[in-house]
Length: 61
Image (tube, rainbow, N blue to C red; front, side, top):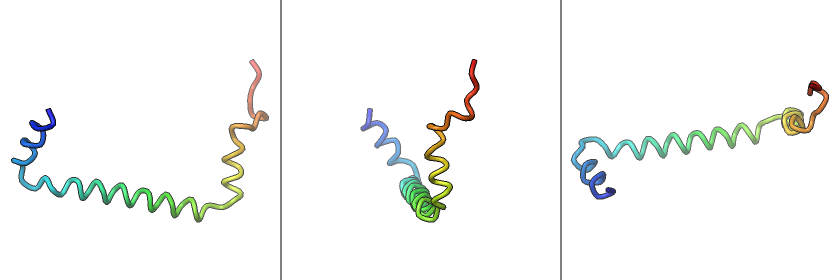
């Protein structure tokens, strides 16, 4: 199956750009995520991290 896909893709013109584009999207996404994590305010991080433990907003059935 893999041999069929490889031979099929070898016959396509311009297919070599897609792995490069995928790598760039992956790299840019994680660099942006890292930048956001480093620059996030500590108050926001503490508030979001305590959300699962906050029982004040739960309604009783």
